[in-house]
Length: 130
Image (tube, rainbow, N blue to C red):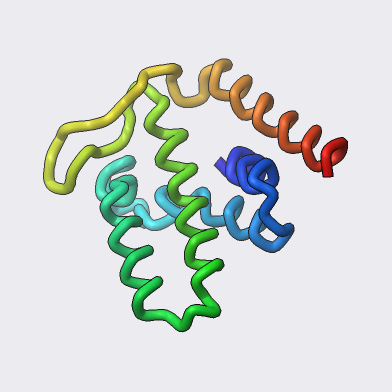
């Protein structure tokens, strides 16, 4: 997740500090599970991050807005990646419905190839285009 987060942020042309924040926050959905809750349960719900992002953007001083959005982008990248797996992510709170594109199993070779392609694209863009 960190490599893809950093790659997407770099490809988007975000500043280096943002790339670091996006990469670090791309593990947020797993980090907040606290080993107590079911993996890919409530901590992987898009609604959680939409609510937190909206609340923080309204409540926090505007100077923090870019950082809130960087963290949200990291979490969104995590959810997007997990939605490509066989298990997917929850569709709605308090439901067993899941959204899964089923492109690969977690840890499968295809997952690593996709990550490598994004990383190579980010390196090429940062090196040769900018």
